[in-house]
Length: 119
Image 1 (spheres, rainbow, N blue to C red):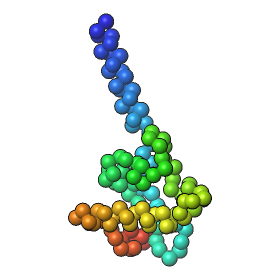
Image 2: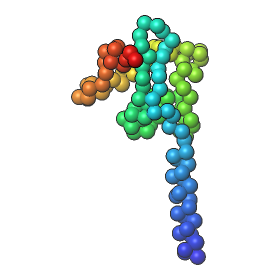
Image 3: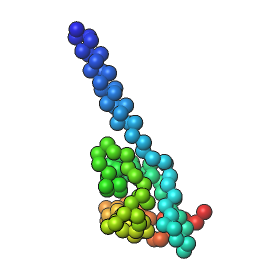
Image 4: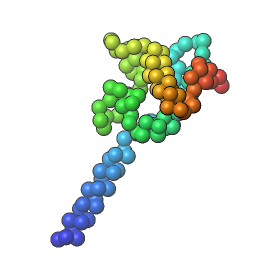
């Protein structure tokens, strides 16, 4: 009986771990393009940023419930009443975090052309 309970417990743990990793973490790189012609799109290192925020998707995907698959930023910004347009949202969210990182002694990009990299 104890052996059966142990096996069932191990299977339950394996199932929980598998479910936690089943949530899609999105693409490694995302091209952020606010639909403007003046600046180059931003090649956003999505997986790298996930590591920096320790997998807390809600840091950027602020309207996502725990365990829910986040929608793309462009699915709300500029399309849903009350949400700032896409360009404003990206600049507000990204610049605020980069400034916090700089204040913490790190070296994030702060100038326009450090993020808007021409191909």
